[in-house]
Each structure stands twice: as structure tokens, then as C-alpha cells.
Image (tube, rainbow, N blue to C red; front, top):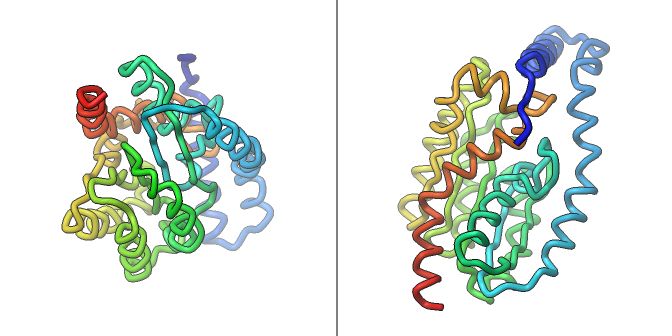
Length: 254
């Protein structure tokens, strides 16, 4: 996997800090300049969505259903297949020795409200096929306008509609002090909502937080928000200990 120059990581964090200060100070021109890399990545959204629609045509006995936001699509990665969903898929295929059928309903920019409104109804038909694996990662886009009551309500609605033992990814650490309080609160809510419903939690927050300065410098895309290939590998590593036993059980049955 190609390395990421530390200078790029520093530039990304610098732009993120500038954007935060510009919002606080009401400096529109400054904000627009700082957010240019983010808008450049947003141009990837139609490409990633089309890539996953095409990938859905690949048949396979193992069925993986993914729900979430731009991290499921792979915004910030070198290709959509390097998202955490894509990297998990690659690992499953390597283990079972055959293609995996993937339906990725993730939508860039999705909040918990939009996921409940738009994606949850689209899971009805895929869930009738009894997927072997369901993953969800949502909530990162809720942090900017953080509302814990709304997040609890939306997440409850989503998880009530998904099968037990859905693997739910925590909201990652962005390594930004002014965001960490909301992220920690969101993850407390996530655990409180998911665990009593019989779902499992992938420790994405801990995995990203522990990366420290190395993660800051080398594991974010140029917008300092989305992971790059290396960052998505950290996510996949957090999911994999929960995914692997599902794969092993599937192999014993088949």
C-alpha cells in the first residue's frame, strides 16, 4: 500500500483547524479556501456510488450487506474497493476462496436521520435474503451539528430494523479536541442503544484514537476528515475480529 507523506497529514490538519476557526469567526472566504479539498473529494461521490452499483452484480454465496455514510463508499480512498467495506470483502474472499456478493447502501453525507429515512427502507428486500454479514457505521456526519437526543432516536430506529448481531462501527476519533467530547458522547449512546438489542460493536474509536500522531500524519485523506487507504485498513482491522467468526461458521456450513 503506498505511503502517505507526513507533510500531507500536517496540511490536512492545518486546513481542518483553519475551517473550524473560520466558522467561529464568520470568515466566509477563509472557510471556502480551507474547505476546497473537501469539495474536491465530494466530486468522488457519483463515481463511488456507480462503482458499488456495479459491484453488486458480482454473484456469490456469501452475502454482505453494508449500510452507512461516505466511509462505506470509500471517499478518501484510492478506489472504492479500499473502503473498510471493500477491505473486509477482500479478506472474506481470501478466506473462503470465492467471490462475495456485496450490497453497499452507504451514501456520502448520510447522517443518522438520513440513514433511517433513506437507507433503512432499502434494506427490506436485501434482508429477506438473510445476509451472512450486516455492518453499519453512521454518525460521523452528526457530530458537526451534534444533537444527542436526535442521534439516540435515529440510531434506535435504524437498529430496530436490522437483524441481531449486526456489527456496528463506533464513530472514529478525528483527533480534534473540539470534536472529541461529542464523539465520546455519541459512542456512549451507540453502545447503550446497540448492545441491549443484541448487536456487536467494532471498536473503531479506540482503534483510531490509539494511532496517535502516526494516524494524524498518515491515515487521513487531504480533507482531514475521511480516512485514506491506510486509515480504512485500521477500520477493517477493528471490524475483522467480529467478522472472522461469521466467516468461519459459514465455511463449516458450506
